[in-house]
Image 1 (cartoon, rainbow, N blue to C red):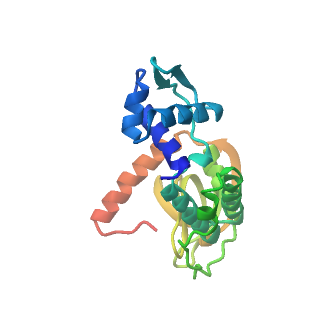
Image 2 (image 1 turned 90 degrees about the horizontal axis):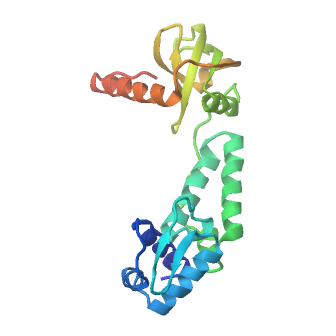
Image 3 (image 1 turned 45 degrees about the horizontal axis):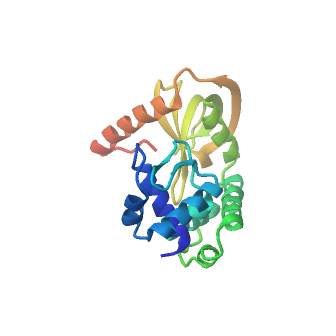
Length: 235
């Protein structure tokens, strides 16, 4: 087991306890000697972990400690690399750059024994075959969702009929061939899914919609489940 994995296991073990736990118990649960356990606790404390206690008194991890990137396990590193590669090839340019930045930041702080695993991951994402082009900037769609803002859009349906809509966007789905905005449509008085390649224009209104996006997402999922059971598609 790598040292980084050992430190991660110790943090996870400490998180399970609400009261001080003895060093010997921690050593037994993590499979190390008591001497190594004391050394690992000192390392974590130096890295910013708020671990209180001392030999003979027991140890407790105070709430609020976030694991730094160097504490990722090998499986977590592979998940990050695979996810970042997927985002880079299948989303908008801003998210693609963000995915690359995430990997660069993680690489900068990973210990030497884990850096090769980040740089040589063999989990690959095939190139996308989607040749659909969006007219609107998807970063603006994401911003409207993040801020819970109403937007007006010019939309062309599957039959080529143009309509003007005022919507409350609360989710953006990235499928293999299309991207879909889930929203409440004021014109229909119901949930609608809008393909981004059919949105001809989008104008943010700078005004928050009256319901929270988490509430809308929950209600939309219930509606989608009903459509699925009835064999219907809302896209």
